[in-house]
Amino acid sequence: MATNLRTPSFASSSSTSTDTDDEGVRGTCEDASMCKRFAVSIGYWHDPYIQHFVRLSKERKAPEINRGYFARVHGVDQLIKAFLRKTECQCQILNLGAGMDTTFWRLKMENLLPSKYFEVDFPMIVTRKLHSIKVKPFLSQPIIELHADDTLQIDGHFLDSKRYAIVGADLRDLPELEEKLKKCNINPQLPTLLITECVLVYMTPEQSANLLKWAANSFETAMFINYEQVNMDDRFGQIMIENLRRRQCDLAGVETCKSLESQKERLLSNGWETASAVDMMEVYSKLPQAEVSRIESLEFLDEMELLEQLMQHYCLCWATKGGNELGLKEIVY
Image (cartoon, rainbow, N blue to C red; front, side, top):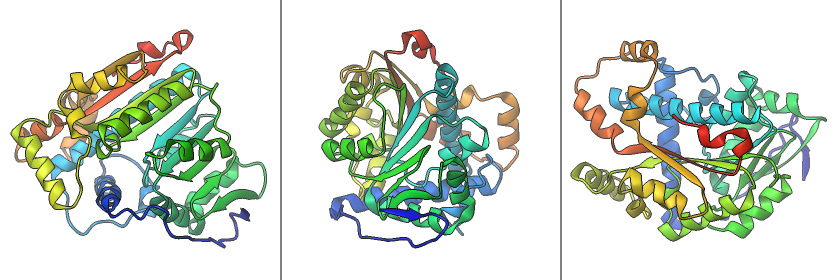
């Protein structure tokens, strides 16, 4: 239905995804958001929007966690901006499993928005995000500014405006996903950047392969960014798996996270023409020295070895299809 975003008459409805196996996965959205919120609060990076989606945790996060999130946000942002530069922002971005991500607002703040920015997540998470947008002018006003008239398409699991859309859908149900994105006027001919952060690992290898194939087949020119675990066969990786399992959060796709090579192979075997992968320690080592000095002055890190272990068990992967004339294959970290 059409409703006026300036009049907060938000129609909330319950999630259609009631599978209890997904509860632990949905919980990771809250965990990640709270970690980002804490890191922002002590100055790791500037994000005035995240405080409007998630409360500040009373529990202090460990320095290695904060630096890990800094590297994650910086690394993903660098690849996003490389794609935007190559396409001169004449493109669309599709963030799959976006959670409380604030990239849309941060790109608008930097005048770097694509033609349209799409987000997808479980209906329950989307409902919560839409509620925050509805009741907080700091979040809703940037959307209104970009829209042609007073009314936007919005209901409990869905928002569509000229430059920004949020869709509640299960990424394992590709017909439903495609139908809802078409309703928001996604354009298969427009260069498209797809982003997943700690999303594919919660799917079975078959489900994530289907999603990757769908992405490669749906857009003529595209880039895919994936951030998630890697090197999970060693003892440190096994402890990570056990800790998550105790929280009823099973890494159903962990077998694809054995190495950087297995991460690249998954992309290449599912329709992508090029694939690259680096662990997060490499990302951290390539940070501008001034930034490293700045963030390392924020808090004392007792054990550099623990940071290195943690960073070696997460990676940033990216793949491209088409876009030779744009130079997408030239994008490197």
